[in-house]
Amino acid sequence: MSPSIRDAVPADLPFLPPVEEASDTLLEGMTGVAGLPVLPPVSTERELAASLHLLVAGKPPVGFARLEEVDGQAHLEQLSVHPDAAGAGLGRALVTAALDWAREQGYASMTLCTFADVPFNGPFYATCGFETVEDPDGELAALRRHEVSLGLDSLGERVAMRAQLVNRQSST
Image (cartoon, rainbow, N blue to C red; front, side):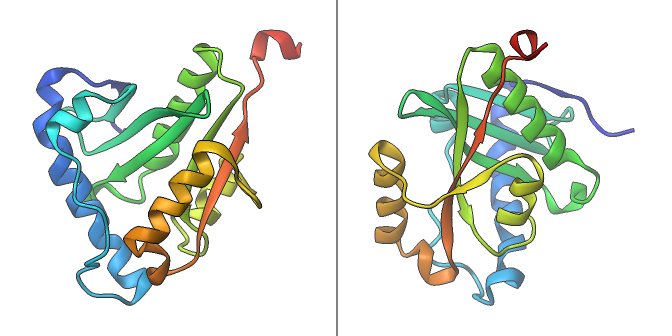
């Protein structure tokens, strides 16, 4: 049985930076760049505590989804699953829970930025209902420009993606 997805509590925060750091090591084999020197630093407990919303998997957490708001819509800022827990469906469960949360909050869509060709990034998010935003604008475009300035695109093609959210009650 996989760990349940739940809202994060303050006691979860110390576990999340190590989960993110371990999760980032999975990218090394996918990008061919050892050490990934251009990845942004791992989130601090303070940054995570300031998130719009945090969802975690497990107790103690072995995965988390960090949600923010971009252009007035939900934005999946970070999805991390510890490599020891990878392959058990936790990432998908976290994304589903994040989409459900955003829908419940009244958001019309959720965006994210990710590697286009890493199997557990762009292709994975496509199976969760996200589509590539060919020409992002506003704050989403600013996020992509920031990623380029950090050098993330030197590791592989990056894209912005969006999932449209439909209120389940209104779709009947």
